[in-house]
Length: 326
Ligand code: ATP
Ligand code: LTN
Image 1 (cartoon, rainbow, N blue to C red):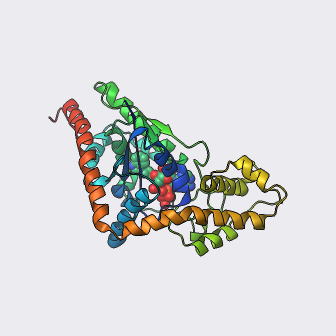
Image 2 (cartoon, protein in one colour):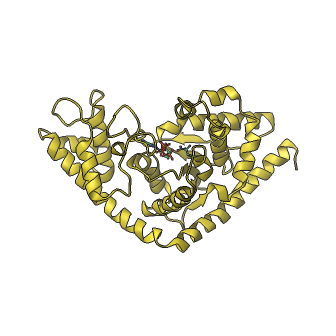
Image 3 (cartoon, rainbow, N blue to C red):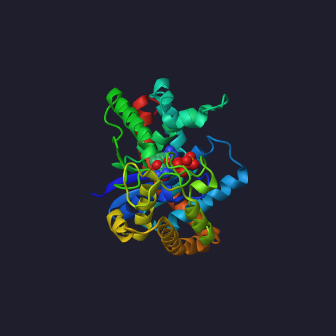
């Protein structure tokens, strides 16, 4: 039997190279050999303030990007979290199997709540909703970037706690990171992760960025002192650029180091920018076709909802029976 995987992205803005290299690239690679579920986690997005129309548009553009990067909706289940009400139902139940202290230790919560005296309960219990997203589908693996490792660990703890209290109910899933690029760094600050909401526009390359924007962002990207182009612990900025180059060109970091041995940063950056633009071209073409075809996107999400609901309901009914409400 095929192994099952599940993952998700928040519809909070354009997908960037960090999302692709850290998460979606693995999804595309795994889609044929696994039974795969990919979610648009719109209820996670509202844990920070969203504009109504923008959120609606972001959901559809993320669905289009999922398909444009290579996910085949006839092979995988693409769906919207809010379309399957089992997610919020299970999240409520799991809230009662999660300790305050566990959530207080979550680094993403601490980062997002920083300097804000008015953080919401939704932001606090965000990881419990994520645990519900995962556990409903009984996946073997959760392919995500490194920043999500702590959330998957919490999910495992919640699952084990529930299983110990009642009987075997949830599969305890493993986190799965890519070999390279589990944490792509910001282009303007190699000490922080590339993010669509956290850093300036110069920090990330969106998959929807126009060629001239890509070239400008790469030109402005921070580099390390010295002049050799190599990946090493004391060259975090160049290492990051090499990992990105490798992902978009298919060449290994070692091959790229050899190719640029003795060459200047100028030539390296120009060719890296061009490689990204070339790689993005077919993705953007497919994206533009899809985004204009609203009915097709709706049909993909509807089909995903139908498939996901069936699987999710089986787990939810089992949980409700075990706790005594049915
Ligand atoms: P935010 O704007 O909150 O930073 P984000 O860019 O991290 O959002 P998410 O929707 O939270 O995007 O993440 C989607 C997936 O992309 C997750 O699996 C996450 O681990 C991965 N991811 C996000 N940023 C990076 C990064 N810089 N490097 C590698 N993977 C990443
Ligand atoms: N918190 C994740 C998004 C997310 C997710 C999930 C990822 C929500 N539910 C379930 C994997 C599985 C993030 O990337 N910020």
